[in-house]
Length: 389
Ligand SMILES: Nc1ncnc2c1ncn2[C@@H]1O[C@H](COP(=O)(O)OP(=O)(O)OP(=O)(O)O)[C@@H](O)[C@H]1O
Ligand SMILES: [Mg+2]
View 1: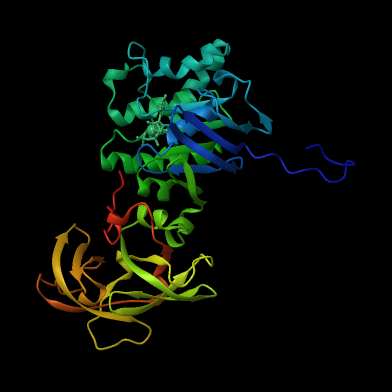
View 2 (view 1 turned 45 degrees about the vertical axis):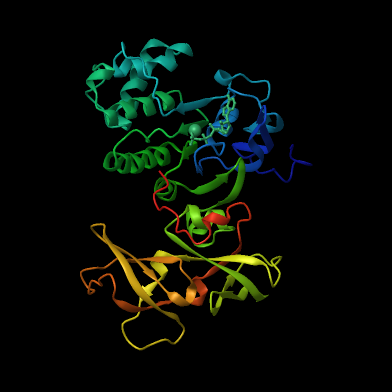
C-alpha cells in the first residue's frame, strides 16, 4: 500500500506473506489453505510429522512448484511470475548438493559467479563467509576432505553469500548426529541473528524448533495447527494434536461435565477432575481428552494435598535416561492408561521400584482439556513419543 497524503508512512510489508495457499497433487491435498506472514529478520520453524506438507510449502515459497490456489508475496509483491533464481532466496536442503569436484571456497563462490559479481569482490566475500561459518583456512579443501558438519557449514555459507532476502532450510541438520546437530542449531542461530536474514526452517525435531525459532508453525495433514512463539506452542497448545506432538504428554479420555470461563470439570474413569479449557464451543457431554505433561505430574511424598489433584498409583516401569528418570505408573481410578512422569532431579530423590504404591499429584491448572480426536480412537490414552525425529 502507498502512504496516504504523505503523513502516515505505512509499515514496511512483511518479508513473506502466504495467503490461503493450497497445493493438490492428484488426490492428495498436500497443503491446505495455509495463511501467515513473516516479518523481516524473523526465524520461523515449520514443525510437523512426515508427509504433513512442510517441503511442499517451502518449495512453493522458493518457486519450484506453483500453488493450486492462493498467493505468495515476498517483499510486498506477488511472486507468481518470478522464477526461483529471481526471488532472492538462499536454500539449504537435506541433501546438501555441494559440488564435490570443487573446493569449499569454489562452492561458496558459485552463486556469486552466476550473478556476475566482480572477481575481487568474490574473493573478499568468500573469505568473509568462510570466517562467518568458522571455516577460515579450510577454503582450499575439497568437499570430501571435510567432515559432515563442515560440509554443512559450506552449504550455509553458499546459501548466504549473495545476501538473499530470505533463507529456506529443509531439514539441513537431519543427517548429523545428535551432538553435532545441537551445536549446529546454536551456530546457525548465531549466524542468522548476526546477518538478520529472514529464515524459514523445516524440521520434525521438536527440540530444534523450540531452541532455534522466534516462531513455530505446527502443521498436520497440510494445515497449520498453531503458529506462535515457542513458549506458547509448548505451554498453550491450541488443540490435541499440538499438545501431543510437543513434549511427553499423557492423555486421559473422558467426558466434559461443565465448562465456564476457561475452567472445566470432566469425568475420567471413576473420578471427577478439574482442568483448563481454551475452546468454549465444547459442550457438556462431549467426549474430550485431558492432556497432562509428564513433567507436571509428580510423586507426593508427604500427606499434603492443598491445591493438588491426587491419585493412588502403582509404579510399572522406571527408565534411566542419564540426567532424568522416566516412570510409568497405573492409577486404577483413572482406568488402564499408563501415566508417564519424569523425575528431573534423581540425585535428590529416592528411586521408586516397579510394584511400589505411590501418590501421584498434579495441579488442576496443568490439566488441559481438548476435544477428543475423532479420527484416532485407538490413540486415546497412549502417551505420545517424545522425540518426534
Ligand atoms: N510431486 C509430488 N507428487 C505427488 N504427491 C506429492 C508430491 N510431493 C509431495 N507429495 C505428497 O504430498 C504430501 C506432503 O509431502 P511433503 O513432501 O510436503 O511432506 P513433508 O512434510 O516434507 O514430509 P517429510 O517430513 O517426510 O519430508 C505427501 O502426502 C506426499 O506424498
Ligand atoms: Mg520434507
